[in-house]
Length: 160
Image (tube, rainbow, N blue to C red):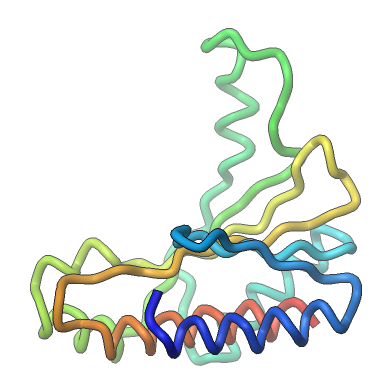
């Protein structure tokens, strides 16, 4: 993880921990960040949707992940549901996407950006927001930092 992402993450973590009801997890070599919030799923979901729109971005798709997993679990021999509710927002920034692919055309696989909102069945009072810190081709670190800052800002806006 580069230094600006580490610093941003540490500042966000310190602020969130001081709030008490929000926790964040990220392993040293992990690209998945999870924020846990004590609250109502519908409220957190609406906050994430509003935070994305508040950055001037359009949501291209909302993926109902828990519906598919609930519907198909028995087909694969599973009895329990992992999630009570889980949905993912797919969105992109045209400005950042142009910068990203102009640095290296293979970076197209990093679009759209995704933020997931979910409640794990074993923790029904905790709503989680998770996202990936993107990792692009060499030479794209500056635009990757911008993308990470955008996503972190959305989650920060949605979790207060």
